[in-house]
Length: 187
Image (cartoon, rainbow, N blue to C red; front, side, top):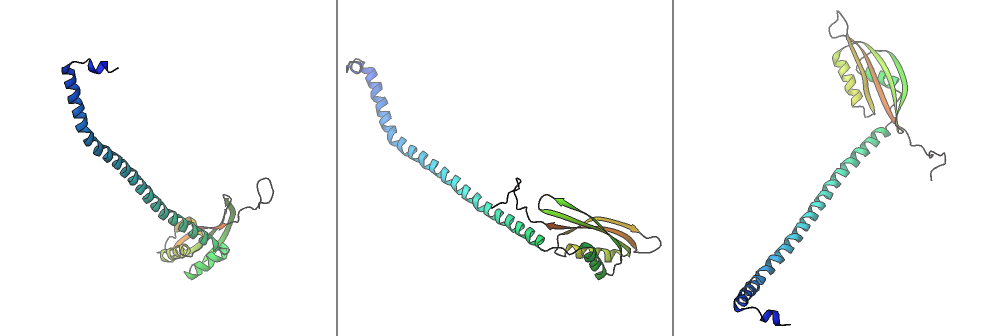
């Protein structure tokens, strides 16, 4: 059995001895390089975990912002708008505007949770400043209202005098249905 190793000539033994010596010298160098490769791999994993934790922290901030926006929306819709025709007339009177007529529009459902109520009003002999203050007061009212139509016509022969048609919509958040599609009550 020991024959193949012993059968090699002196030259081959010398090459084997040199290769063994080189291998023995390289082994102490290979161990630190191997350990360094393992440490770098662990550092890469740690960096990935740090990045994942930073992403989670950033996501928490975005989630808080989204929740705050959602809470603000719910709070805005919690304040129910008074009947539009009377409310608009009151807001117009505060700006010394004359509402000549108001036309209620049919209610429009928006999905399952929101209902839009609309009214068109006509203002005669309106100045631009009073009109802009009226629109600003509507915007800052805190109610879920929006101007959906604005038709301004200049009155001939009168400076800063306009006939205006304003469409305003108010939105109401309705309670979700308490029955399932099959008609049975939810628990």
